[in-house]
Image 1 (cartoon, rainbow, N blue to C red):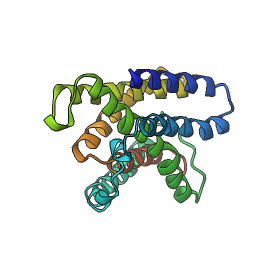
Image 2: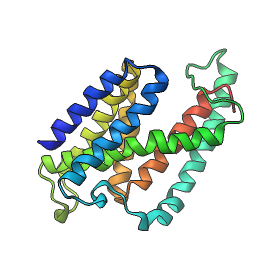
Image 3: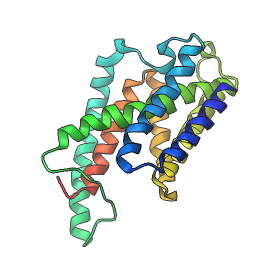
Image 4: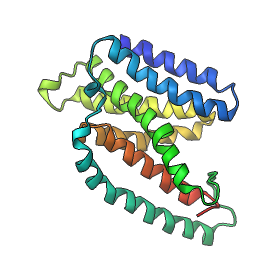
Length: 210
């Protein structure tokens, strides 16, 4: 029941925050997600490992996903070149200031990917899977896969509410990939890095600054 109440509260707060300026919302929403994951976890006496915070596997995650990040970067550059050749005006937009890519990537990690993965994968995926009857000792189960789907669904609804556009519901599909990576590797570092790489690829395709 806790995960239902917390998730509903978080989405409600996101709806309220949308009435703030874009800059204010960009500051507040990551904290809503982060606290939405941390507070109920700590209040129930569960450890941070419940949220996938396991620093011991960082090296493995970096090695496995480093190649993925490079691949996303290369595909993004190629896709952007094709869009420029085929279309007068690419259908995607992204605001990245010239010579500010490093700052932008750090922002994506700390204020976008980490809070979102901490809540939707670290907190909600495990919580919803337990709600469906998942037990960690039994390994993979239909409840765990159900949690992955629910996590991706809530992730998509969050983006639709945040951006006020139904097209944002398409984030269900990358959300499902992030959920699978989290379940497969059992650490929040993995989906955070993949999430950042995906956003970087999107920006490369969509931005006028490359």
